[in-house]
Image (tube, rainbow, N blue to C red):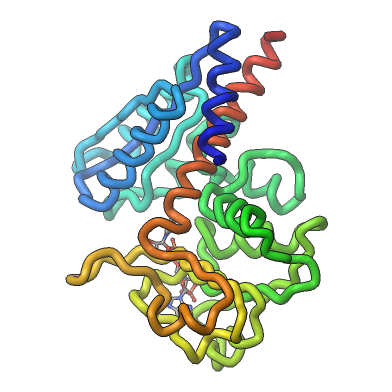
Length: 275
Ligand code: NAP
């Protein structure tokens, strides 16, 4: 649905003679990162965007990574860009993301974008939490007056997720939890909406879930049994009122948000040029 809307917006810009371009910066040869980046390019192409693939060797220096980002900042064909995280050991992912021109921040993770989120001002929203908000909206999951528990406080997922859930108009009451939270299962059992972003296979079980709760599983863990989430799906599915699967739940919506941020950036450029 979102991707269809994005495609229409890309086509509307094309009708004005404008292309929309998404660039990815991938450093090293981590197999999972390569899969994610390929998925992003495939989705961009399907939406009618141009996609630019910058692959740098694992031996790259911070300076080389940032120089590549600066070149993309200057490239008028690039409307949005992401740096695939995490970067290899020895490189500073946060510093790399800060090098992205805020206007081209497709992942919504630049400090400028995160500041806009805190201030509840317009701007690109972090792609994974924004994708989760779309899931909640699409399935008419009530947030106002509900208790949402978020497990994980990363700047990539957990923290911005808590902010998006608590803004005016969404109006959830949010409990932000982490590895130091005492008696996590008891806290989680209070949740009407439980968002799990930890990175530990099948960490959340029946003891964490209130009957009828909505459970959103962000985790992606590679195991001998294949890709699994942070939630033990089989243990929880009959207790939860709704639950997202892994793979196939949050991941595709993250990509949809990335495309939405990119076409939004292109629309702002076009508007600024008077198109
Ligand atoms: P992260 O930066 O490693 O953060 C993990 C968070 O989980 C931390 O805040 C940590 O708490 C918390 N945590 C760890 N063990 C815990 C425990 N025993 N009890 C409670 N909290 C605990 O990970 P991330 O970047 O947020 O990613 C989380 C997962 O989501 C990963 O599996 C990642 O692959 C996946 N992911 C998926 C998508 C998607 O599109 N589907 C996108 C991004 C990430 P402390 O802060 O106290 O250490």
